[in-house]
Amino acid sequence: MPGDNGKGVEQEVVIIGAGAAGIAAARHLQAIRPDLSILLLEAGDRLGGRAWSVGLPGASDIALDLGCGWLHGARTNAWTGLADAVGLTVDRTPAPWSGGRRLQRDDAETQAAQQAIGAYFERLESHEGDDTNLAAMLEPGNPWNGQIRAIGTYITGAELERSSVVDYTRYDPGPGPDWRVREGYGTLISLYGRPVPARLGVEVTRINHRPAGGVGIETNQGGLSARAVLVTVSTNVLAAGRIVFDPPLPEKVEAAARLPLGLADKLFIRLAHPEALPADTHMLGSVSRAATGTYQLRPLGAPVVEAYFAGDLARDLEREGKEAALAFAGDELAAEFGADIRKQLSVAAISAWAAAPHIGGSYSYAEPGASNLRGVLAAPHDGRIFFAGEACSRARYSTAHGAYETGVAAADLIAGSLSRKA
Image (tube, rainbow, N blue to C red; front, side):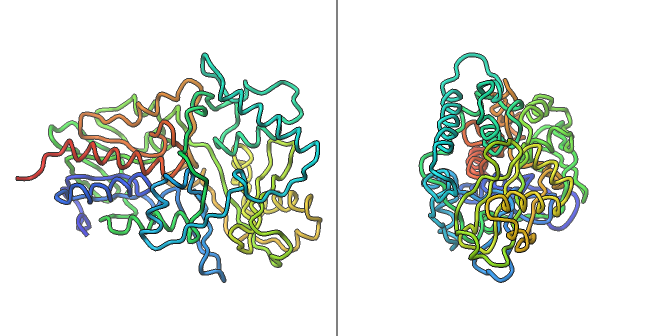
């Protein structure tokens, strides 16, 4: 592959980060500017970034998505069509929040909770005036505030006090339901990236844009030079100064710091007797606590439960380890299905995104007053350094198709900035 022969390699375009944004940008550039040499650098050991599918032994046709799993806004989500193009299967079973099966009683208490939740999100949508945090929109003393907090934390990956109301109201994944890729969203994104010349295990440490007309890139495996660089690493990596810009780009680092990654972790629990639980059915662990899991029972009919933890709860369980996460989930499942269910449960797979090297979290949220910094983060610098990733998307942040769209937009800008060879 181009660029695989060591130090001092010259490329026209170097893309840093092989997640959805970097892969989308590379593929788009290949299509519109086949004259350009492109090299994708990834600090980790695989393509996909925060999209990561792992296998389930004994179920060869189903993968477990440790990262993004739902094709949000599926009818207009670019990845939906790309799944068909690479030969994967889009499963159109409705999501629990859009008509899918939910394990809940249709009683007065449930209806009261739904009314309170609906009223809260209506207040968010109708908010005018200065930006504030999501917790400020709670009704003091409302008995359903715990459940509202849990749902809000799943959405942003952070406690409500940290997250911007304005940013929430700008979120728009696009029309259509939410679907899944049977073989895995991570499988789809990594497959789509295969035609791109890439080097894994290459950590970029410095971007020198002092020289006129070119950019120097220092890595743990030597140096490269490029005419243009696209940076698609996570906001937590940028904010931590893991990549040094020379001269500095303080506005990028500040924007990244105020658009931090929230945390959402998944625990896939193997069931010894799958028939004990209903297939493709959603369950909320607790209807009163903020620190609770949300559970997809037997997703796509697989013999597992997908447990989803967010915010401080996810951080605590990640720190304590998989047995603690399994015990927590077991308690919540036992409360619904009886104590004997615990005997059936074992860990099939678990994510730990806060500790993930070169990533450090799940998806971005904006601190109050910081929503406009998504545009600051996305803006090119000097026609040579470009930025993309879900955090750069004003309306589709936190999604893989938002990342895709920012990658394609950055590729168009790069193509326009680099003159064609004679």
